[in-house]
Image 1: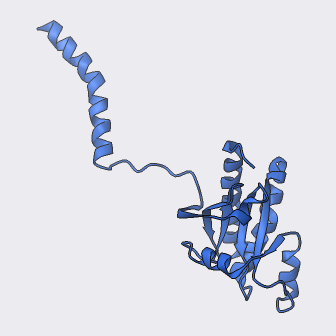
Image 2: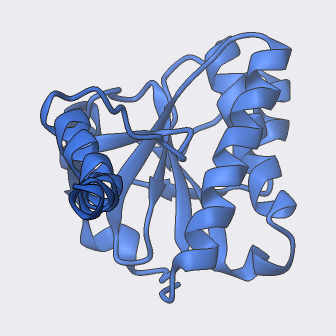
Image 3: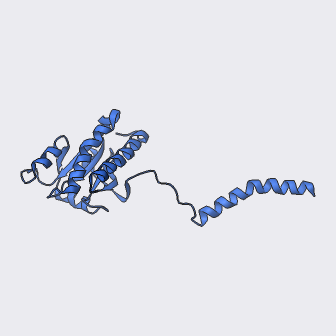
Length: 182
């Protein structure tokens, strides 16, 4: 009887963790950890015009009126590529504009826009961006192949804008580290 008890004890030491793991997964008791800070888009947007640069891009659609949300996005568009450091040549910021006329914007907004690549986009591209989950109210990350895949909804307040910039930077550095493209 002692032989059988030892065998059962040894067998249960190996089978019990497997049975418990199977139960946890089947009953959805385990909530997997998420390492990204931005929101992965459920339907990524693929566009040829974004893939032409061959870089990772921070994309923002400039609204007609630049409020606090817009000012925070412009700040992050300027600062994040600089903060990437040694990988700076693999990243660019793209400000999408529907009209190249900046005269109706304040001098502060015109100053913030300096140093950020500006691209005039046709209306069909604007409508495509507006169909995304956050529309024009987010900073998007596009991969070097032109796929818009991640969004960072715009925030208000100096602390929130700085925190969002850190989140974008963290995710972007992780993408640059694991990516062989761009």
